Amino acid sequence: MATSSTADARLVHESGHESGHESGHESGHIAAGASIAERHEQARRLLHGGAIDEGLTILRGLVAVAPRSVQLRRHLALALHRSGRHTEALTALVDATDAHPREVSLLEDVAALAQRLDDRVTVASIRRRLVAIEPSPRRWQQLATACRRAGDVDGERDAMVGWAAADPGDPIAAHLAAARSGRSLERASASYVTRLFDDYADAFDDHLTELGYRAPSVVAASLARALDGGVAATACDLGCGTGALGTLVRPVVGWLVGVDLSSRMLERAGTRGYDRLVQADLVDFLAGHTSSFDALLSADTLIYLGDLVPVFAAARAAMTRSRPGVFVFTLERDDTAATADVGFRLGRSGRFVHDESYVLDELAAAGFAECRATHEILRHEGHDPVHGLVVTART
Ligand SMILES: C[S@@+](CC[C@H](N)C(=O)[O-])C[C@H]1O[C@@H](n2cnc3c(N)ncnc32)[C@H](O)[C@@H]1O
Image (cartoon, rainbow, N blue to C red; front, side, top):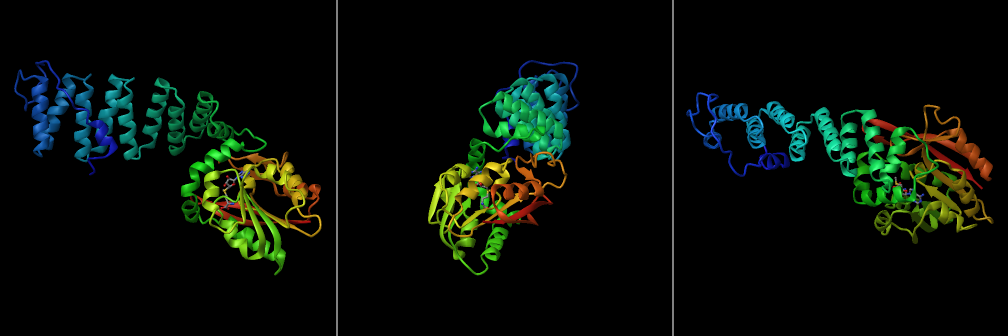
């Protein structure tokens, strides 16, 4: 068993010695009249020398006579943990919190040990107690994570709402509180997208490979089909991220621009075949580039926009007027019909799902022709497939 872990390190707060003499409660191993400190020292020596059961017996006896000693309870829990009696160790620490219900470092020890033992329900219940003592944004966030891991959907939602209230300026908290509460938005804020993907950029490519991510390859394949052996003179990758799509479409595109809100994602796209990279919101970028592109492409990005009417209007205006053009993108598909009234909804994941007929109708209303959608699995989330729409429209 590891003895240098955070949980162990936190459990070892054994500086100083207990003082005072106890009488009348000695176990058979302890000399009558010995002080708690002497008995504790004896337990230490026994444990150190490998006499685990004897050392534990003394420690248990000491905890019985000095039940408010956090130091003794921590030592007992550590000794139990090191001897493989994990559940008893956790119980010893939880019992200690009854004596010291507001001792933050002790509650942290319990949470750390419960986490190591994968006791998710205990982690969540301790995190709830910590929030009650210190209702800071960090504590609410930790509670939300613990509830999610424990499968407590309502608890996670309440913690997200608490986190957003504790830090009203945090875009992640605000967005996820809306998502978990079933509240819809028109779109994800630029500050949410930027923070999310700046933080995610380093891990993005490896993570998506693990999830069997296919959005760039299905967009590239649809573009190749639409071009039918031809080449698009100018193209823009909307939400290019780390540039996976750029690499794939480069052979069939004359001049390629990548647009993204996240500077950290763009840094990674830099080496992947774009002629120009622009840090901007994609709707603003399109609005500033009328009659500029033969192909507009977007893989796994319009899922951060709920209402697609402004995107489609700006996209239609950005297509070159003098030549036919093509717009290819992916979305996540709603299988529940819950979007039927407005055509989109913010999912619990924080991404939007869209109704297929809403998408095709709004594309046509914006002036696109031959609007079609196919169904594809875009990646997996845990063991669940993410069902997507791959949409092609022409001008
Ligand atoms: C899931 S990633 C996909 C990246 C890339 N298309 C791919 O398939 O690997 C979504 C990307 O869209 C960007 N994004 C989301 N909303 C955006 C917006 N409104 N304007 C520009 N970029 C946006 C994010 O910063 C992120 O890099």
